[in-house]
Length: 341
Image 1: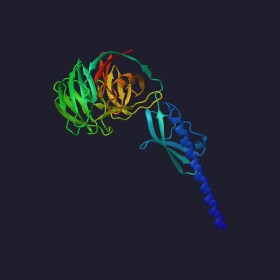
Image 2: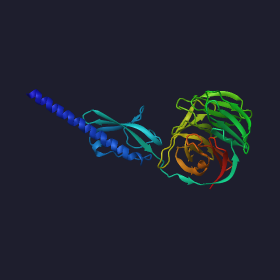
Image 3: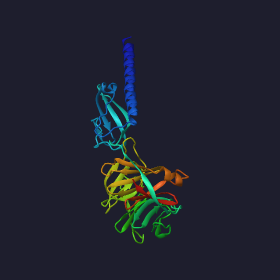
């Protein structure tokens, strides 16, 4: 009889404990979901519900290979944008509970709304699937994508006839490009390598592998010191020019109320990175020091004139002509010169 009573009490206690654990995790999950849209800023403290903290001996946050017991949003552990983390709750009886969560970190200052005026239009070959776009002098250097159609070419602004071009192998999908001195660098989408060309002839000089942290190649630009690449995530990578397989540093991108990923074609100008967001008619102005979006262009009007298929013929091309910006897109028939107001 005593054994039955003991087992019954044990089972009851176990059931109560399990239910309490579920309550703790559900409370933490509800809290995390409620905070996703509002997000946090660097320096903020995660104020977890008392139902969680009162039942915890300690709480830590795991990032996979790193862990911190601080509940402060510290840039040593967090990046701008989405952060996939796991809460590790050590209970007072020594048991541990875990809860996965997404913590959004946003820039502290709202991004400026950047206005523009179209001052000139130039022809663009509507067969060109633009992935990289660069202007030097009056010459456009363009990287076009699609398997079996990829190439690097250059032509005079105002014309659509190539001065020189180099086509890629059938299995290569070309991506972003940029000029460094007398060379042109070009990325590929999923081939895990880039190409280097002679700027004058577009003759292929050599190839380079990506650093392991880059899953794909999307956009590419140059800040006078490092190559700057995107891979379709929220991250932008700074690579050594002398050896582009070496990562110098990286930044994650976010605005004041929005996290961005699918960062695409890039352009560096006057201390800022300008970036397309794939399938969105916007161009972001980004602080290269910390990844904060400080300004945003809305090119919906231009995109509507040129976009019939929102998957393919989207805004994707940024260059600067003096202080004016040139914008175009995949399969667009025009290049627009806009004056930034």
